[in-house]
Each structure stands twice: as C-alpha cells, then as structure tokens.
Image 1: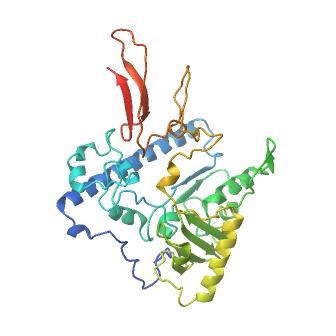
Image 2: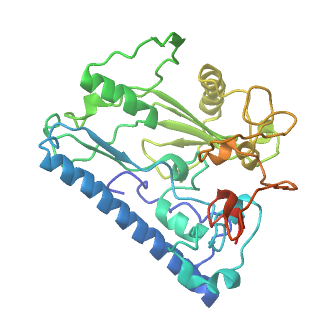
Image 3: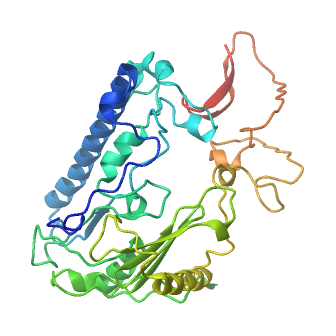
Length: 367
C-alpha cells in the first residue's frame, strides 16, 4: 500500500487458473516445486555473483564511477513450467506434459547438467506478486520488472526509488542523452528505424519529476496493452480465437498498479478511445498484422535466399565449422531419414553429426 502497488483496502488479484493452495498439493508436487524454486534461487544468486565480478573489475580499473550500469529483468516470471514444473523445459515446447512422478524420480538432477528445469505456475505467481499473469502476457505480471541504474559520476543521489512510468525502449535514448550522442538516420547506407523511446535522464536527479512517457503500446503473441497517462487498457488473448472477441480491461495504474479494479464498465468511453489508439500505435510501430502464433515461429521457414531452401535440401562442403542450429537442417517436429557414406580407417571413431544439447538434441557417431 505504501508503494502504491495495491490500493488502500483492496484485495490482491485472485490466483490465476491452475494455481492451487500449497497445503492442498500432493507431497510429490510440493517436493518438486520446492526443489525447482531452490534451483532458480541458486542460479539467481550465481548471476548476482557474476554481476559482482564485473563491478569489481571496473572498480579495479578505476572506471566504476564513470560507467553507466543498467540492470533489469527481461520479463515477468515464466509460465513455461506449467502447473507442476518441469525437469526439461523443451517438453513444454513440444506439447508434452511431464508428470510430477516422472520429475521426482530424477529430482537430484535439478539444477545440474542433466536438466533444463522450470518452476511451476504457483512459484511464478509468487515471483510476480502483486501483479497478474506471467511472462508472455501484457498484464503487469508479464511486463513490470525491476530496473537499477548505477552511475556515481552522474547521479548525485543513491539508493532512491523512482516511480515514473518507463519502458525498455527508453534505455537507448537515455544513454544517447547521457553520452550526447545523436543517432544516425542511416548506417552504411541503410535507413534506420526511428527511436521510439523517451529518455529517462530527467529522472536521475529529480525523484519527483512527472513522467514524460505519455504513451506505450504492448503486444506479445496476441496479448495486447496500452498505457496512456497513468491508465492502462489490456487484454489477454486465447490462441486461435478472433482478436475481435478479446475482452479488454481498464485499470488506473497511477492508483492501482496491481490491476485489481477493472474499470472497463465504469469508463467505456475512455476504454474505447484507448483501444482505438492501440491500433494506431500498433500500425505506426510495425506490429500489424497481428500474429498469435508461438511455437510455430521457432521453426524453419522454407523460402528462397535463406538457409532453408524450398526443396528442403542442404549441402555442406569441407572445411566445416559449427553453425547455429537455426541455420542447420530443420529436423525438429518432422520425420526424416539420414544416410551417411564415410571413409573410415580401421579403428577410427568420432562424431559425424550432432545438433543441440543433452537437453534437446542428438549425436550420430561411430564408436
């Protein structure tokens, strides 16, 4: 309440579907969920150590005070762990539900080289508290994250909080302003996209300055949102359904950052204006046409002048070096045959073809 995240007297947003009370979960689910979150916490602690090494190195070089460090999360807590959590996240991307019993049987692998784990929805909700929904969504649970700026030579204050609304696209114009850089209109003869963000530099020494960020659109796999002067219109899209059927919600984020009170019915005219403005912003920023595909976008698209020829033939000639999986033969999600003809001296062995990792990949080798 003191931070303005939850309105005075408001209840927290209800649990998202699929999130059950902890004490009602079976023992194997509680054990799995706890271990998965422990691994996540450990990796976060490890990440913090690595950031500390960078900071320590800058300090030894005498460059820390005059280095601008911008640290932020990339999105809200993940939903790819599903209702139970997973040992192998790639199962999620292949539409396979891993049962808690299957995962618990290998629980000691969590956090090690034989797993690619992800916590369940319940822990994602805890990580996003007090916001709704998750990564991928455009509610605050998917887009509201911490941001830390460290620059002793340029910021007189220290340890203070800022409340102005800003978005990730504001980081580049902020750095350009701090460095007195004018972005070029063209680069090597190629016309550059215009910078869409608003500099945050004015906030560094003025904690109470009103935000200069008036409008920001959001879109992620059909989920949409628009922020305008402290208000936010947002909709959660169901894959494959008509975008016209999406139900828009309206929140006054200035007073209700956790999106507890939907004001769509009380403010229909404001909501209609914001929806219309969303379409205008989406067109201006290259969002249209809307596309709610997810997994399909990770696959190869067979077309001329690309690594994936329309005839689906791949030819490689020596000398070969490792290549990114995205440019190699697209073997996932389809049937294929491999035929290899090799010259092999007696007793010789080794890998002929390998792709991916232990988590999701294979190796064809002679032993």
